[in-house]
Every structure is written in C-alpha cells, then in structure tokens.
Image (cartoon, rainbow, N blue to C red; front, side, top):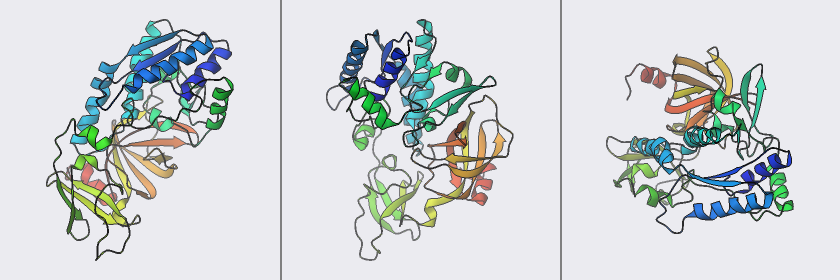
Length: 366
C-alpha cells in the first residue's frame, strides 16, 4: 500500500470479498535533501486506510534493494547517454521480487497491488492482460514479470475505470480519495530532475548543434539532462534565420559532448522504423515463433503500433515497425502485444533505418 487511492481501493475490494488482507507499506528511498520525507506522509495515509478497514498494517524498508537493484542501473544508463525507465525495473526487482519474497515468507498466498492490469490463467499459462481502463493501463511497466511472479499476483483494479476507483474511495470516506496520482521517478518522487541528477554526476556543459548543418546555436549543461524528442528546457529561443518552429533533441554524441537538435516535430531525423532491443523478456517463459507479427509501444503514452519482431539471439531482437515511429529512445522499453495480451518486451538499444540496424547488428557501429 503506497498511501494512494489505487492501492487503498484494491485493499478494500479484497477485504470486502472476504480475503484475509494485510496492508504493507514499502519505504524504498531514504535520501530526501529537499525537504520533509514524503514517505512518512504516505505511510501515515496507508496506515489510516488500514485502520478504517480494520486490517493489519506493516511497514518494510527495501531501500538497500532499491539502491542495489534499481538505482545503480539507473545511474549506469545515464552515464551511457541513455534514458532509463526505473519504474519497469522497480516492479521486476522490488515490488514483485523483494516484496513478494517478504510476503510469501510471512505466510501470504499472493500479493496484490493497485496496478491497472489483469491476470488470467489459460491452459496453465499465466497471462498479463491490459486493463479495462485503456487510459490507465500499466502493463507497459509490468512486462518483465515471469510466470511465478504472475501466479502470485492479484490486480483488483484491472476491470475498473479510474473515476470509479476515486468514487469508491470517496464513498468509503478515505482521506486519500482526492489525493493526486504520484509522478516522478519511482519511489523518489517529484524532485527537480536536473538538481537531482547533479548530486550524482558532475555536469559537463557542451555545444548544441543543428543536426542538418552542424551550426552551433546554444549550449547545454550536460547530456544526461536531455532525452530524444525533448522540446522544453533547451534554452535556444527564437532565431533570426529560423522559421519559428520549435526545436527538438534528435541525438547525443558522447564522444564530443554535443547535443543535436532539429526544427519541427515532423523532422525526418526524429522518425525511425527499426530498433534493436536487448534484455529481451517473454512473459510466457519462452520466445514465440519468430518472426512475430504483433503490435508494440516504445513509450507508455503511446498506442501500440504494428510491427514484426525478428530474433537475433536469446536476449536481443530486431523490431521493424510498419511505419516510422517518433523519437524512439535508447534505454526506454519496447513492449509487445497481441490484442489485450502483453507478451513481454525489452530495452531499446539502438534505433535507425533498416540499413543502419543491419550495420549495427554486425558490430560496425558502437
């Protein structure tokens, strides 16, 4: 229980259904230099809901597990010039590993969370299915779960719409019924991002250049502060010889510390149709027959797009989309679907057109 409305209603539904429910609050981050610890407030909110429901409440500290299994990789990815998604790894390594192990060791049969997703078992295979609320579906962040983890998971909100969840919390007189949804880095919160990263990296300012011409038009404070497709915070402003369209980040060069930009959302350098994914994971436990026709998304807030997945080796695959995709970003996840069924996914390693990817696969491009 996070102290938010979703996990509170999930606990209420299970309790009302006759299950023996124990609420557990996880503290996974301890270093809050910018003010009071938000985890303390969230823990009190979770405790208040448990008191209202009349169920036991526990608090556990997984800060060491989060730092070692999630945050360390988060920093490594930024050092490599990529844009990681720690929420995916947090679900894999903390919520559905450290917390699951803790719960099972304490006598629990299953764990439940407030995620918007569904689980079904068909012919002995546990499936991760999209939630009824398409706007809140969180299977993208759960695509690394395995058969054991899914077999021990419940998602009580999977068939509900978010407005109904808030209404249930309000009807139950939960103090958290109107608490806003959490944002920011998983378990770290809404820190000012550049300020937060600057605690772990020494910023190295460099040039901002136009991709098409090589012209230097500004300066960046550090490549780690920028991601592909970024529009805000570039500090370029209007230019006399430009046409007024916004600038977007289209690439980074770690070798010479240059940030490349293009003008206009529809610039071709922002669109690619092919990627290589690493850390490939299939929820079923084994790869489907390849090539695979399916749909995929390369960011959370994106409709799935038709594509073909072709195998390279057990941990990597090439994904070719039917049409070019905007600002596919190394370090983020590509997640595969057939209808409502989330098949798994991997980490985006490299993007380009078919010829560039063919060269990359044979090691000619670093």
